[in-house]
Length: 241
Image (cartoon, rainbow, N blue to C red; front, top):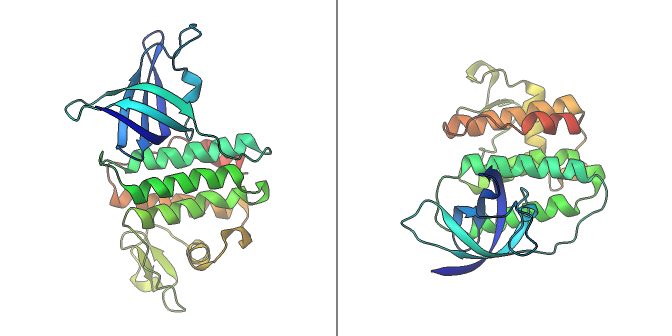
């Protein structure tokens, strides 16, 4: 059966001499993997591999057989979104990080309209956000993402509960905490992002942002033990230095 849908590319790998295998999240079909034959060939017609960069939004027409693990794309056209011209390398690095987190966190193949809307909004935010606020975006994304997939952090920070416990997903008194090294300062920064109406107003230095991102990833990994390492994290830290 043919389906027309909007989709976001999460990962693309080379296959054979001229083809690619791409994983995407689509509005109609959720998480799916597609073979695109000849995408890396020199032919002038057909679907080209340069459309399948992580974070790229496409309108696709795809064959879908629920009995198969790999589907095929018949047509693919880029969606046109407004893009901010500056700091494109940083934007691409943030998008690569966000798409890898999504890819390694989501296992269900069924469509999820709310999750697709979240991905759609997140990718457009990165592309249009003023460059001076990009450094804070990965933290904002992670906190919104854990909420979206059902692991929202308990907002119980107080003068007594100042240590974020990523095992229990809430803030604890220092003597009761079973965290693996979440400091008071990092816990406070998590609370600042969690309670702020505008993440763009929060001021952190690079080392502080790095620690918050790694703690939030530890929280995700604890609850999603299949998640594995986020390979794009090292590049993200480097470009946000």
